[in-house]
Image (cartoon, rainbow, N blue to C red; front, top):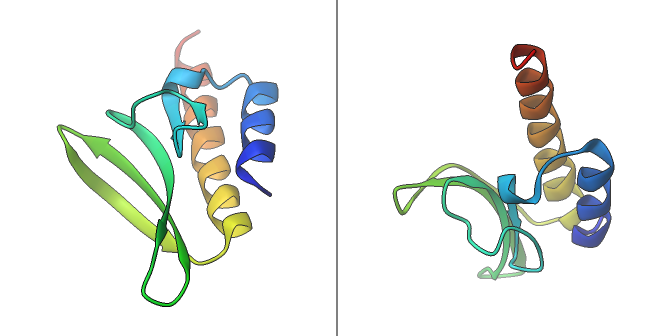
Length: 90
């Protein structure tokens, strides 16, 4: 899965764009107070960093070297959050 495919799947699932940040390309324009996926240059390869940013600090950071794995992980987390929200908002 790519960032673009992840964005499409999240829209289909009904996850609001203000709940996630995907490298500034999709979702919110800021990574503050939301689950985020950013791409950065690592020592030996490109790294995909998934984290939650709160009060300017990153928490629950996971680093992946594969875009598909990072996207799958973030999709799973956002899907679980939406399911919990839906269950308790009724």
